[in-house]
Amino acid sequence: MKSYKAPAAIPLFCFLLGSTSVFSQVGINTPNPRTTLEVAGDMNISSDLEITNYNTLSNVDSSTFLIQETDNSIKSLDVSNPTGVALAYIQEYIIEEPNLDWVKDFDTQIDATAYVVIVTSASFNQELDLTNNPGAPDNASLPFASAFISGGTWHLVADYPQAASIDESSIGVWTISTLIFSNDVSKQYGTVDIPMGGTSSGAASSPIIN
Image (cartoon, rainbow, N blue to C red; front, side, top):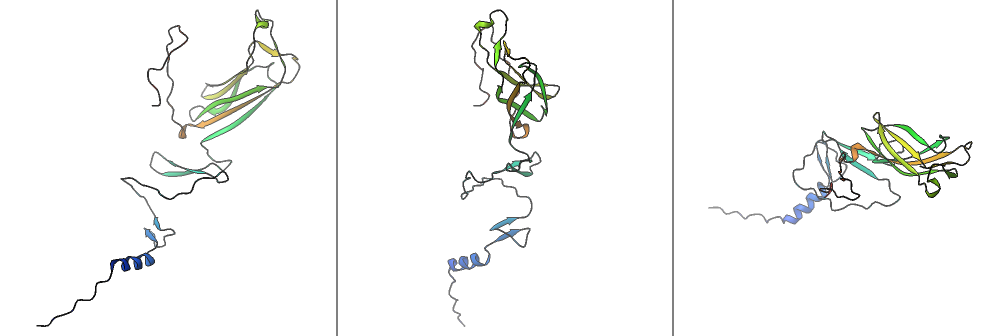
């Protein structure tokens, strides 16, 4: 009866080291992976995905966002592109020569079904005088500016109640700054009716954000 001597076992860690040097990049559906792991096609992750190594964003970096569409596709959003889509927009309107200090209705033509417009600040460049209405000398006048929806688009209104330009021939200028949000990247809760019952204080039945 012949006996055979078994070959010495190859240490597992040597095999792993060799594998690491040979298979440093893995590609799925691609023969030429460009990174450690490249998947050319759809990928479905049913459990957690943890990213443990990432660089922080500095002030000089250009930030890019990823947005998932309703069909589960992913789109990139580059806010550094001045003509591209953004999470929000800042727009300043210079409205010249209104009726005294009154902008009753300025149509921005911005689609109210696609965007939300918020007035952040407003100023008028002419000296004002209180009107001769009863009790006007005892009043002060604060600027009033707001955005509202009419005919499916966002409109602006601006005025100094109980006041008007001292020089009615002067060319007044309203500067109205707005913040515009896209409905695609913001959550819309709709309106909430608050019955006050003739009182000056109240509380929501429940918070819209908890």
